[in-house]
Amino acid sequence: MATEIKMPKLGMTMEEGKLLEWARKEKNLVKKGEVLLTIESDKVTFEVESPGDGLLLILVAGGEGIPVGEILAYLADSEEEYARIRSAGRAAAPAEPTGERAAPGLSPGAPAAREGAVRATPAAREAARQKGVDLSTIAGTGPQGRITREDVLAALEKGPIAVSPPARPTPAAACANAKGGRKELDREEPMSGMRTAISRNMMESLRNSAQMTAFSEWDVSELLRLRALINEGETRNGFKATVPGMMVALLARVLKEMPVFNASVEGGKVLYWRNVNIGVAVAVPEGLVVPVLHDADRMSLAEVHRGLADLVERARQKKLLPEEISGGTFTLTNLGSYGGEWETVIINPPEVAILGIGKASKKPVVDGDRIVVRKRMPVSLTVDHRLIDGETSGRFRRRMRELVENPGLLWDRTSP
Figure 1 (tube, rainbow, N blue to C red):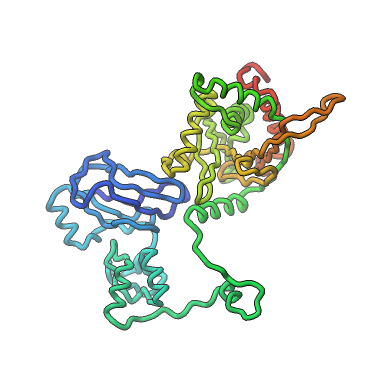
Figure 2: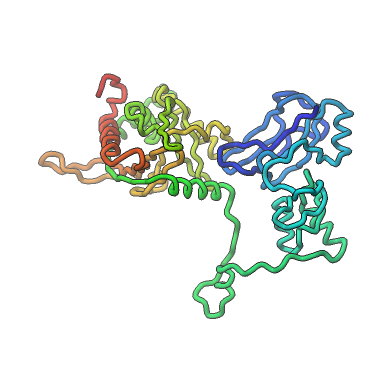
């Protein structure tokens, strides 16, 4: 029996992905474990390995907006099976994939009864919108009867075709067209996949948790001095120390000491996680991605920095694996990387806390009867007030401040 190759789910919130390229060609004999194709989600680029052996029969050449679970190809067991599936119009899927569904009672390739039930690629929908074409009058030739852009263009070439009713002008368009108005629309563009995912996750975070942010300022003079000492021996040590890396190491210790910050609230229950998996927000051109350093509490300072450097580099190249952006229990975001100082940071669900560190700067500080210049770093800690109250948040910040201002305690496992 032929093996289905489907659009994989590369994360809890992924609904569709983009097929970038096939590593093998049509009717190639593929072996189990070989790289078969490359998929891009809103956060990662991922190479999909073949789940078995067989002759490759490609259904979808590539493109954006392919729903999770849609069949992309088959691996046929034999030449006969390959020919049978091919002769069936490449739509002999044993199960309806997730995503848009054909209207009940319609076979693949038949026009749908209404626009909302039509299965069509994003390119087909855009072409239909531009030409004013009613997609429900077009027979699709794509997988499972999906309408392609080529189907729309072919239908237009055949002659008159039903058109969709003109869409109502949007408020923005109305403003642009209103004479004497005070603003004119410059351009309109769709929100990117990554920005859509960020928007969805952040709105979910604010809707489903009671967020409270507390602000502090920590003296990082000693931490920066320690970083400079480590980096003097960078070649010998095998890593370059960074403020985020050192903060991850300190956080890993405090999260073990205060497990309520390493928890989640789900269905009226508090889930305490054994693993300390710290996500670190990384800015990329399309938005923000949060790779996760798993089991950070079991790592040495060198291992934390090497692991974090590798994740950040691959995040910027969009080459993270699905498991490297999931399973986080706490998040650190470096506001100082773009000059930020005091900001309200939003929890990354289903976590219950996030720490934002701002740009460190020189400030005058009273030391006894003297005024001295010290490096101070603004800090924002947002917690889910359903689980963590102000007193507990204060204890967390006080313990972190103690370690940041006395980083030598990080290696003193006997300290309170």
